Length: 428
Image (tube, rainbow, N blue to C red; front, side, top):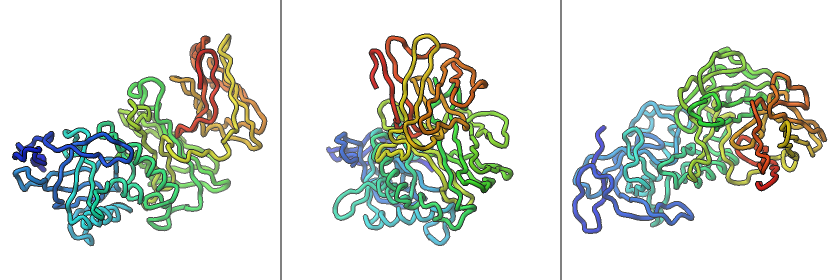
C-alpha cells in the first residue's frame, strides 16, 4: 500500500506537496493536563481494517488516495479476515468487538477524524502513527482513550509519540481492576481450569545493558491452587506488542509451583522455557522521562486473558499484605549484607519481590519465605548455591554498596516500593 500525500494546507491555504508529512497545522494533542502542541490533520475514513488501524483520505492534500493510519498508544487483538461486512470478519477473541467499537465512534462522527502526532514523520511498519479523534457532541474526543478505558485494547507504549503513555497506562489499570473487555477472564467462554488462580510477574529490566543480557528479562507464572496441577499446553504469553511465546503441549505446573520464561536463548526444561528472542522486549519505565512501561499477558487457548502484570503502577498502587510489612537495613563496611525483617503476622513469599541497590538487583528464589517476625540476611558476595533458610546470597563478585552513602530498596515487580534504607549522603 503506497503512502498518500500528507495533509492539511498551511495557514496560507496553499496545496501541499505529495508525501510531505510535516505540512500540517498545529493544535492541541488532546492529552489531559498537557499543553504541548501537536501536528494536526483532518480527513475522512474510507476503510476500517481492525480495532487499531484504518485508512483516511486527508483533506486538501491534492489526492483521493487514502493513507493507512496506525492508532497511537493502543493494540487491539488480532483480526485475520478483513471486510466491510462485519459478519464476514474473523479474528481472535475481542478482535471483532474492538473493530465494531471503533466503527461505532467513527460513524457517530460521520467518518470525519482528526489525526495528531508529536513527530509528523512517525511511522509504524509503513503506516502513519497518529492519535485519532472523532467529534462527539461538537467536541473532538480521543478514541484511543476510549478504547483503552473500555478494555477493547491493550496500552501500547511508544518512545516517539510518548505524550499519551501515562494517560493510557492509567486508563488500562482502571479497566483491568474493573474487569472490562480484554480484562474479563471468561469473556471468551468457559476456558480450561478457570477455577485455578494464577500469578504472573516479570523482570523487565536486566542489570546493565538489556541488549547484552536478553535472559535478564523473564516472566514467572505461578499456580496458586493448593492441590491441582495447571495444564498450560497451547496457552500463550505476550507483551504489549505482537511478540508471543506459546507453551508446548506437555507444559504442566504443579500446585504452588512456578515456571519461568526467559526472553533469550537456552534449552527448555519442565520449569524453564526460552522465548529465543535476540533482543529485549520489555520497555524500561524510566526511559528518558517518557512515561514508558509495558506488560506481560498470559492468554488461554480460547483467547481469555488469565493472568498479567502491567508496569509501572501509576494509580491506586496498593500491595495488600505487603503494606508496611518489611523493614530493611544494610551493612556497607566489611562483608556487605542486607537484612530484611517481616513485621507482619503472616509468612511472605519473597519470590514475588526484588531487592535493589541500583544498578544491582537481587531476585529471591522460590523457596525464600519470610515468616512472621523473622529476619533474612542477604550476603552480597556469597554463593547462591549455599543458600540456607534465612541466609541468602546475592552472588556478586565484589562490594556494591558505597561506604560514603547508598540506598537499598525492596520493590514489587511492577515498581511499587515496599521499603527503602539509606545511609550517609544518600536518601530514599
